[in-house]
Image 1 (cartoon, rainbow, N blue to C red):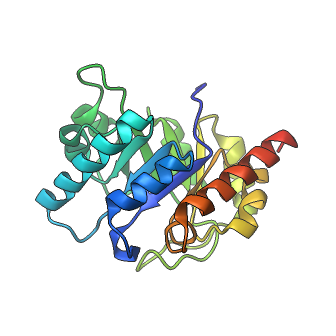
Image 2 (image 1 turned 90 degrees about the horizontal axis):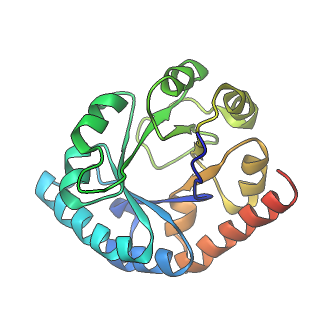
Length: 217
């Protein structure tokens, strides 16, 4: 797969926000972020849809792809650019059947993996990208999977040619290390949105991505 994948995968989780989802999305779009996931584990389906629709309307004209977490039906109805599923959600193929391209919309389907076996299985699907982690200890999930570390990430890199998204406990000071271990993109939540200036932090991550790419990471 020769998909040109954004180097930063920003995740908006309203449980961590002090500003609205739309304000944060505006700041991220203005900083050069090209890919945003909206994750909301506590909202009703109606609330999740309404906010997803508003985010898609804001981000799409800015050239930013919105990924909806867990819900391919909401991704389709909201006009989002894709859906991300976990190991306990709909399969990649079923999710694509629900939200796959309509009215010329090219929607991505991504999947989370936590072991090399899960990653190898995901590689055999039509997934557009694969997330792997948690790379480090994370506090954004109540029951996180075991930490995989950068060494297992290196092994994961050798198992797939699909875009590989590293997730879990990633901070700016360790971003270069994770890129060098083989990640195409970094999924960041707390260290991106729980800071005084998310837009500036996003630019710092993008600078790290550019510098590691320039060094042939």
